[in-house]
Length: 229
Image 1 (cartoon, helix red, strand yellow):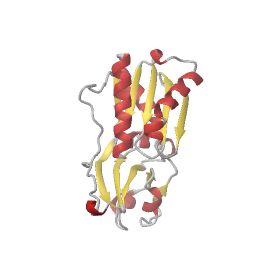
Image 2 (cartoon, rainbow, N blue to C red):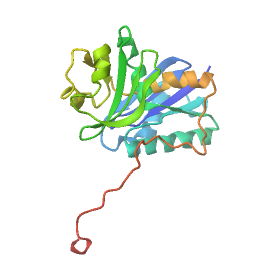
Image 3 (tube, rainbow, N blue to C red):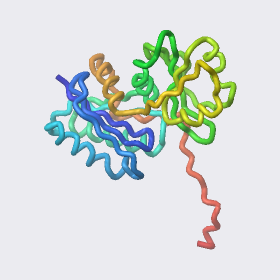
Image 4 (cartoon, rainbow, N blue to C red):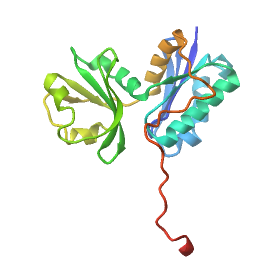
């Protein structure tokens, strides 16, 4: 028996989950500003208490590895690595977009494809395209969306778009085969995929693991004159 604690912090919604092997025990999510930095440890404590478990009973920590929010991913990775180190347990990293696709696959019919995407900025998204078996058919990348995006895929069959960028994409991509689903990333999906990795002993290197930000973080310089402050 393995108890898997999963953390998902790639979007403004902070979510955590506990699985016993591949069975979901419970989960929590919070969509408030500062949840990742201020509430994450309290959420973990409450979840363990709700499941009548102690922190020492956790077998493995799983974390969403990105892409997504730079700050959110950094906080999730720091907490996950800290717990894994303190408890001397393995760390498992799960692709955020693959987890999104996992949460969608039961709704996919026939040979339909899943475009898992997260909002970047303006009309840009982070995206990866999967088949129903979660094989990556178009690799992870960032992309500017316009009315011609995914036209070749859409001509071949149904394409399911999921994630927090769906609303803005649905406003420009117009095709009968384009299906926009209300599926958001969740720690529940991270935990489900983490169990597969746990069985195969696919562990992250605790010392060197870093999230996949996809883009280098750049701090914006203030345009204000510091002499006038």
